[in-house]
Length: 435
Image (cartoon, rainbow, N blue to C red; front, side, top):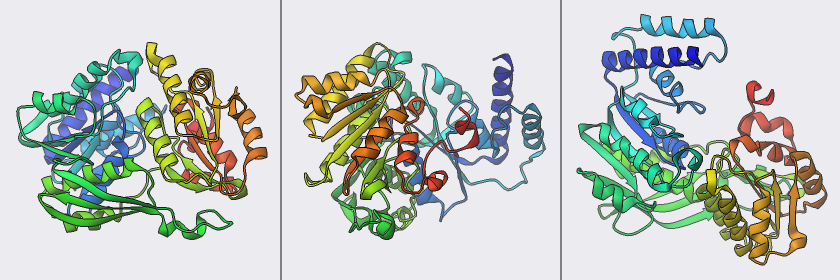
């Protein structure tokens, strides 16, 4: 722990040095959900017009953000590797090539996390994707989460641009608290950037699932800004989270002087991040909605609702849910609320995996979900044994859980070709496989 503190301090000094030497324009973003998708949408919009760098993997913490600024990857447990990173950063001078824009996703798990970033980062654009019940174990209340997230606006440069998802809770309070002009985005009227006429295209499906038709899958909508409208298509995407990410990208693009047509062209290159509502072919002609990157009550509710809304009753829908972690005293209540939502959305089965996941069952039962369609498993293997026997052609399996629940193991077990897991699933790196 002591050595990590030293490393954190040294990386911050080196990152500050790089920023002073090269003076890139910085885009900072935070939020309870949707950060990575928004980051990738912003990158897609800007990269054809500027030289741009953004966080890779999950480099959004006190080590990952400085590494992004320095332009290095983590050395893991190798102190020799860290020394090489440090000396390479020291030797980098102002005449070396450096991106014009840095897109910095900032993860906030504990109170005070944004204070650390604010100590050496001043942004040209700052964005909040959403406020929701994540990491409640450390924050205690949604109000405290809101207070921490909105700190990102305080460190804007004088002519900087604040951007906010207008559909999130506390949006009015955050707007009222901020003294400057905020670009708003969302699905409601009276936002600066709005999506209308949203359509999800799943394409025709045959015996091989989605593989033969993957280019036809995607989301189309009209992007509205200041009375102008352009059509946008996001190939390969499913779910409203992608629409919000695209709107965030549009708002940032306009902040850097791009027009709507340039933005729409850039969004065609927006790629679905792994484990965020990805559609994958499953066994026996089934379809997997892989939403396994992480989970909070807000992101899980959104995923369940999008899946239920876009598949008619002719498809059997199965929710396979792992524990949601770091929810503190609200953990039982939040799991029960998700169970009740599964019942209200009329899923055909609820398979819960893990100790906390048993509360999904309780919530579903209280909402009238048939007991014979509720299944609680101790581990992934038990759940897979059931799913292998049960899955039929055209079944839809929604899979989600917190990072620690490792629900990508369920998705891998349901893939007809598990050898392809490294190309399309989260946490397939060696360090994760050894855990």
